[in-house]
Image (cartoon, rainbow, N blue to C red; front, side):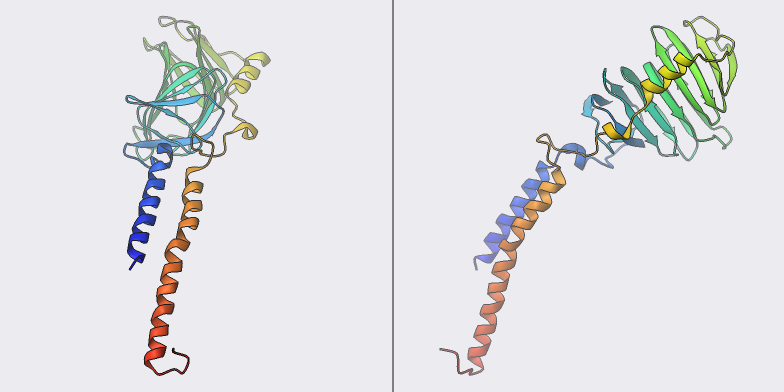
Length: 267
C-alpha cells in the first residue's frame, strides 16, 4: 500500500517543476489579441505590455498595444499574422497599436528609431497599413519600405510599391520605388522624392538587418537551461518511481495466483 503515497510525491514533484518553467514559456498564446511574434532578434529587446516589461526571446508573442523597444545593440524581426515582416533597428521604439489580419487594419507607431516594413498588399475595401511618427505618417497598400525618425527628421526610402507620405497637417507626396523623401519637422511639408545616396541605402540596410547567425535561437530559463528540457528530464527520472512499484505489485499478484492453483514451487 506504499504505492499511492509514492505516486502522490511524484505528482507533487512534477507540479513543482511545471511551476518552475519560465513564465515567458508558459505565457505563449496567453490572453490578449495577438499581432504576431518575434522571429529573430539580437540581444537587448524588451516588450512593454501594460505595466509589465518582458524580456523578448525567440517566438515571444507580440500583442496589440505592445511597445517593442530595442537597446543600443538590439534589433528585432517581427512576423505579423498576415505575413508582413517588421525589422526594428537599434535604439528604437515601435508600438503595435493594431493588427487585424482579417480586416487588413494595421497601425504602427514609431516613437523614434528605425524600422523596415515588408507589408502584405492591402486588398480589402477600407483596409489600411499605416506607420505613424511624431511628425508624419506613411500609408501603404503593399510595399517594402524603410522609415527612420531620428533627431527630429523623418526619412522614407521605398524599395517596392508606393507610399503615401504625409505630415501631420495632411500635406502629402507619393513616393515610388527607388526614391527617398524627408520630413524635417512637425510643421514641414514632405520633400519631393529624390534618389537616395549609396550611404543612405547602406545605413538603412545595416541598421535594420537581423542576421540569422546572431539570432537568439533558444527560449531559456534564467539559468540558461530550457524549461521544457528540465521538465522532461525530471519526468524521465520520476517515471521509474511509478513503474517499478507497479511492476512489483503485478508480480506479487501472479505469485499469489500460482500458489492458489497448487503449483509445486509454492512454498
